[in-house]
Length: 275
Image (cartoon, rainbow, N blue to C red; front, side):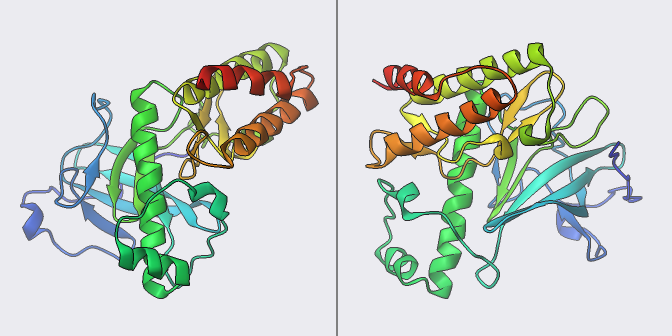
């Protein structure tokens, strides 16, 4: 079980501007800090909005574009664990997103467009910000729609602080690919997942990279993660291909676990929701 370490012994008897220095693995945070975007309403009652100390506890997941870190956010009377997804700085980023993902998206600033096209230092910095903002916006919208995604707490530059999804015993929830559900739970998982895909399709969206590796599994529910590349299946010329691939990826896994589902039937159903 992963538990908060309650590393802060400060009494917080000072203003944010007067805050004392902290060790390298800690930082001061404030929910309403200038320049930081905060999550959608209604705000869950577990979100810490007081001045707090964030402590680095390790890396949960590494990727080509971003790493997900385990963060403890603590005040003088409570502590919570969160996930912080950080899109890498320009010197350490290896973006692999195919250009097909961003077809139909527009970058207004001409200088930024040119820099991204050239792959320059500035262009890669802009690109990180674009992906972080895209994922933040989608998390906020989907959470507000009631879809099973982590609650987005804050966006600070290229870091998204979000709800940490855990199992009942407090462990970080495994990916669906690691789960071994029985037949009943497998059926319920499929119903949850396809319901979420229908909601996306009704807004003419597809996840674009959906697979058992970016779906988390708890005892009784699935949570979808990794959302920066959500596809407009109408505005993107390759939108239908991405939607079809999502259907194949998830149907193949569920079929392999013994639940007979049909990717083509799912695709046809989702298309009917999109138009």
